[in-house]
Length: 213
Image (tube, rainbow, N blue to C red):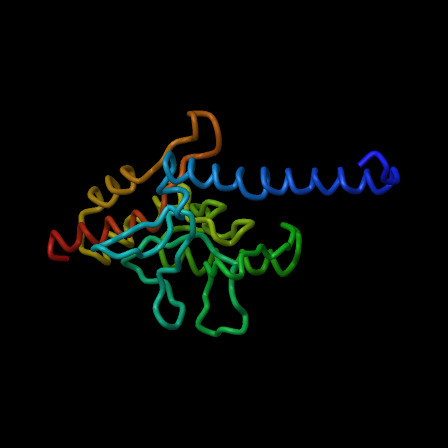
């Protein structure tokens, strides 16, 4: 090797380093991380899938639209926050589409955004039979990803009476279910309390089935 020109020896050393780091960081490290995640965090590593009646119905990390074929929200279900994750070419896509995760990129003073929020305020206030002043911000604004699976407890609270009436359940029963699926701040200090809409709605269906509603 010593008889080779310096530049050739440098390229050989660089190629060896490339092979070593490719094996270490491109093969061994990912394999170890996959193995650890499957052993220690199996549920999360596989997408935090949520099942109902023996079949997978979604992920606890992604929102779902609870709407009819025309995009109208179903009154018997808690509704997620608005979603801008929409395939504009698909007229039956009303949001929460993982393939089109996106925000509107419109600022709070943008006229189009202001008009959209006002429209949402009127529609949601009428749907939930509450005053516009009672609507929390997440009820009328989309998340940055458009796929937020959670709503605030305040957002859930304004929907309780509507869901209870649609399912012919006591308001107190629905409130208790919301409380059951409300998660507090991470470590008690990070973030805000949230309610997972998909898990809550599955629990509602199971409750209605047991009560014959």
